[in-house]
Image (cartoon, rainbow, N blue to C red; front, side, top):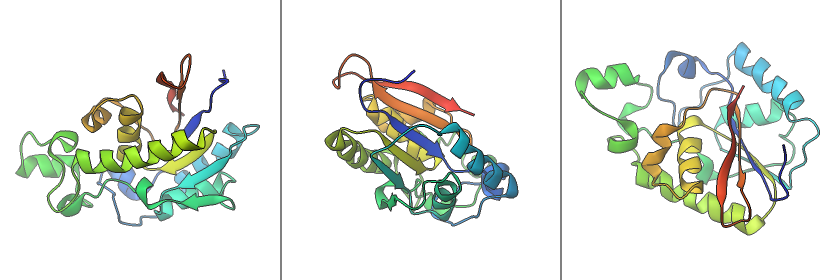
Length: 193
């Protein structure tokens, strides 16, 4: 079901070796797996017939490759504010390994040493949301899980930590929009595979 108001389509990049193994992948450029590339190509079918005023992508190679394989690479604008969470000292480390050294750690509450906090990521998400609302048009975004989760929380007016309550699979499609008017932001669809 589409809306008379602009819809913002959020695409998480396809599978990588690190997303498959649960390693935090912020600023490292890990390529898509063969399965990730196949899923990215299938996004073209899933997005067929939709039109967007703009296509925005994270600067990560995995997001840009997903965008290209989905058929939207030619017109994509790379936006640094769509980059994944900077995990700092936890880059490439699994949550299990972090918890072994730091019991009770939670990304959305505690952030990462030498990296970003939820508030830092939330500030970037707010910049993106401001641009989306100024555009007042349907836009397609390719990025990564934790950033998109914070973006969804901020879209709804929740604190950045609210992103902890949303889960995103690789090559999933989610849609942000409005209920009755642009003062009522909602999540229209989430984590569709």
